[in-house]
Amino acid sequence: MGFWDQLKAKTHELNGQLQTKTAQFKNKEFANGAMAMCALIAAADGRIDASERQKTAALIMSNEALKVFAPEELRQKFDWFCDKLQGDYDFGKVEATATIGKLKAKPEQARAVIQVGIIIGGADGNFDADEKKAVKEACFAVSINPGEFDL
Image 1 (cartoon, rainbow, N blue to C red):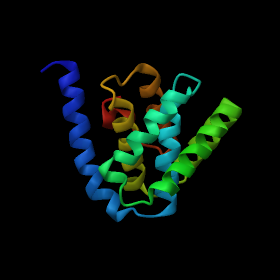
Image 2: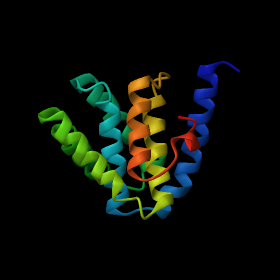
Image 3: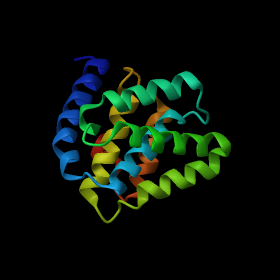
């Protein structure tokens, strides 16, 4: 099996697991952490262009696992984190990472947010080095070994 086929299979598997878990995690902290993760993936290369932001927002809205949340609330929170990252990347990154870090005491929710990052990062078939780095940093923020996700 080629690398891309493995990535697609892993993404499909994670999405299935995540659908089951998010119904259990329907709370503000999880939604905020997931949107912070998505914004970090969109800004993984240090900037967010309009098309990338729109594409990531569309992926969020179409993701089955996140459908337990009101789409407009997710969109507003995603936009809020993107605006922070665009205004001052370093400060925005600290804020988004700190939001994810709030899930440290809830390891199952933290793992699910990491899975959201992997799914969004790999949705275009190219989970690049910058996106992997963003997910690894999120893993460290919640004290999860990135190796658990083959990172």
